[in-house]
Length: 586
Image (tube, rainbow, N blue to C red; front, top):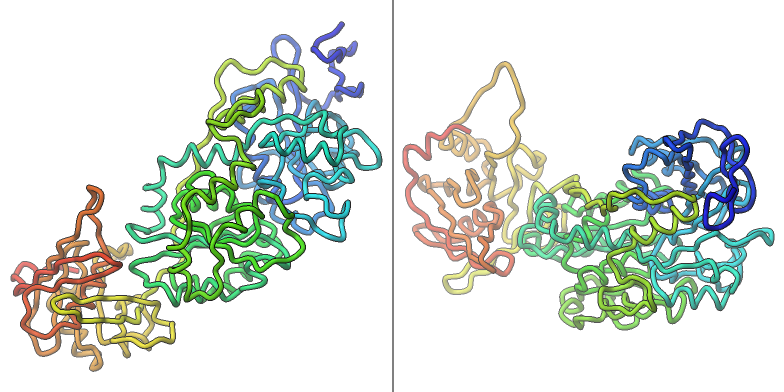
């Protein structure tokens, strides 16, 4: 008796046959009340492939008929982090040998490589990147796009996947030119990862708040893996940008391909990037965090990795090309088109000029050939926004079950982790222009000319504290629980610092985003009230410590300082500190 539209028959013991006639085993898969259930094996060869599979999970959410299990496909140099990621999400995994002994109703993978023919069941292939823009010489068919290579799609002359889920109709045309047989089983469903990014755009301000971005311009570098990647060819670029861009105008972020995380290891990667991380650069985690950081970004600097296409599709902000050519990028691919029309970043000193030369729409035009958009005519396929719904229909058809009644829900991206380090000392450049005091701050470990060094007391090291002309402390640092403690008043702490550090000319306390108390050596205690500007109906705060640098640089006796910080004007009103301000407990 047929139980599905594709002619698969139920066996005598109630176990269903797969599409190729092989029987499912009695391995503990749970049946529903009508005796029918399904087992899905998520087969990941690397961490990046696994992350793509995790974005697919909402398709089966809430369905007790479906059992979900993961396995690591052996053979990749980048599989070391894959099972660790499975453990972090609490999923069940089985060893590869065990997976090969069982039969599954569906096998879902995001890479065609590896000995997938050893696992029994109909196979579904998802792309693990955007746009199929790279080829790797020395493996597979010559010049074939990674992910579209017939040598991997149909290994040992076997059948192609039961479904090859693609993001754009043009990808079917590319696949058909390489393998008409594989293209016959392909379908355009869209890109679940892009849709997750788009659904999370309303969280942009929350993401930026978590990163501490404020009104600064967040520039994110993206590096793919391999010998042509940004970090291999230009490993010093992150720190060069950190040394070039003022801290109060710009924030830096970095997205590194999961393969590079696996190849290098978190410890080694962090050590290599230490100078930029010490300057406050955000290093996005390889799962989910990277997409949250993209949503928060104002501009992108990229090599030939496909991450930039997600940014171009979702935000269409400025994209700078930091790729100097090679033999991996496929001519005419969406990524090649993006790089061809984006401004090229040569030296770090040229970054601001390159950003200004970007033409709006360049990125979106390139991404349109990689993704479906709401207004796109996909030849009958749904427009962007329905990838999970379309995948659900296709996958449940292959399993032979009716989809759940509840609608599938796109899961929003998580709040990204803040920078692991922030500068505790700054090389401060000051320019006096009439009644305006222009302040630019750079990380204190940058070897550059400066008006003075400003250091955060209790956070910066003693060497920087001894060299600082301005020492300040904040009252919002998390207090540690202790049975015994001592306290300072504002006035006593400032006097103590000026007595203890002969090189310090100004000491100050940051009480709030708009209020500081400071004293210049030889002067009286001053209350500094900051009037922040409004921008797009919002109040824009800067780091009050930057205002203290402006106060430090002005002659004694002034009652108002107009500070220009990060391109914005902040009015600082100076008056004698009150007894209440002087006696405030720190």
